[in-house]
Length: 223
Image 1 (tube, helix red, strand yellow):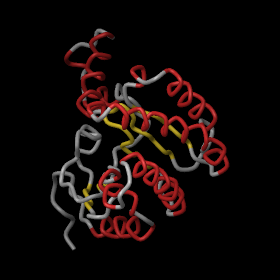
Image 2 (tube, rainbow, N blue to C red; image 1 turned 30 degrees about the vertical axis):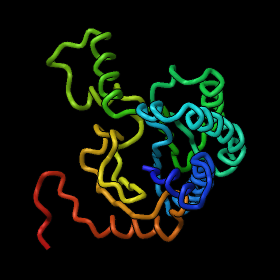
Image 3 (cartoon, rainbow, N blue to C red; image 1 turned 180 degrees about the vertical axis):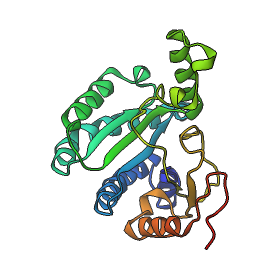
């Protein structure tokens, strides 16, 4: 959860959109570092369904930045063997941005490295509602609706549940992000804002995760 772009910009005396651009630079570095660490999947919260409530100028700037980044980074994504995916209510996005996402996914679909998933116009509750609607549209009977069947109707069922959820800028909440998938995710919160999040912070998050004992509702294995 990439939080703190606006606060970082304000602390430096800049407009909030400058902070988002700095956050974009951070994302590029974190993605490559994650790939080098052998992390198979990285999912980031780029723009929530609730972010439309922000000032029109900021929202417009974010949409332009996301489209610009999607097109500009395409060559590097291919060169670095990154497979890019986008989740969220894409049909509500500007047509040019939808097209940019389609081109990005198509160009990287055969890549075999890290899977980078960008959540745009995304909300965890909305994803659950949309999955339920799909099941109803298919005429699913109650006895056939299992957790696995439900999972198959999420925006991208090929992405495994996250092991670790990292949030920057110190906020202690998940903000409607992957609330179905992250049921057993380990949480790591850092006070560092997203633009300041670097290799050292990523290493620290991974190190703390490796020390956790994951029980999934059961008991820890005896030592």
